[in-house]
Amino acid sequence: MLINKKIMFNFGMMMGVIISMSSNNWFSVWMGLELSLMCFIPIMSAKNKLNSESCIKYFIIQSLSSSIMMMGVIMMSMKSDDKLMLMLAIMLKLGMPPFHTWALSIIEGMNYYSILIFITLMKMIPFQMLSYMNTNLALFTTLGLMVGSISGLNQNSIKKLILYSSIFNMSLIISCISSYMIWMNYFWLYFISMIMFNSIIMKMGINFINQMMFNNYSNLTKIMCWVSLLSMGGFPPTLTFYSKFLVLKHLNSINNHIIMVMIIISSLIVMFFYMRMIFLSIMFFHDLPKWLIMIKAKFYSSMVMSLILFTTAFFNLKSF
Image 1: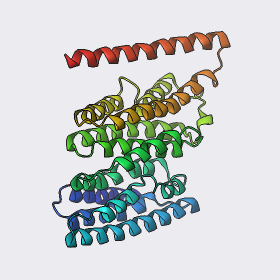
Image 2 (image 1 turned 60 degrees about the horizontal axis):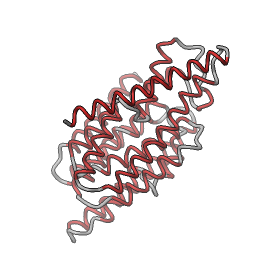
Image 3 (image 1 turned 180 degrees about the horizontal axis):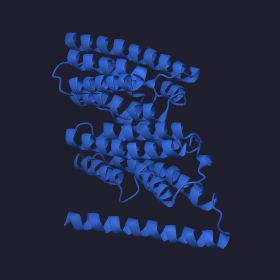
Image 4 (image 1 turned 60 degrees about the vertical axis):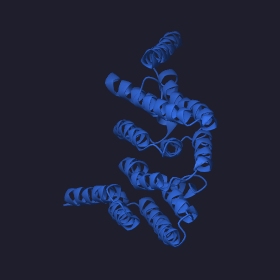
């Protein structure tokens, strides 16, 4: 019975997304958004008190942002150029800086499946609404890049690390929101990477970075974990690196070079805190002698450099 209810709520959530994505008016978009919200909350809920508290906070924030959104739509109908209230409501729903603190307060009370839905499918409709508005979002992009990259450096909780990484990736999507194909391509590639990463983390039962002890798992599980971490960090030649390349190419075509530079710098920071997790698993939690660990570390460094050279050569050849 519980499995049937979960399937029903997942189906309802997907129907809400489909209704909103295929709508041509604000009311239908809002209706699909609320349907997906009402179906996501039962998926998110569980028997422990921490999860119930997260559900209540999430419901209050989403209800508040929906009310502001409806006021914004009414104001747009009265004065067509006034999009500020609607834009702020969407940013509150997304949890973009400076409206991201509510997301930090609920993320620890969610399981990894709920986190996957929360940072991917539940963001899809607000992104679609932003693509309709055609407004300048450079301020939110800049704040998101800074908060998402710098704030993740001192995190030990993997759930909060995922949240800050999602803020960074949302900023990249917002930076190219004017191009429907590019932001949709980035969104789905990020979704695929998150599915792989969450599946590995759930299988290993890891909640904190200092739990990266892989000795109890097979070599295949270790390799899959490292590959998923590289993909989440946007390391070449993974899918997320290719999607970032498309975003940078789009920004270059519209001469938005300042955001380009900020994306490159913040991407290196995000790449660092995912690479840190890989190095911890290789260097500190291993039973081999130190001299053999150093040989392995040199081998992995050589492999990383080879991947960089291969990807650079690939894109250079592709440009000719």
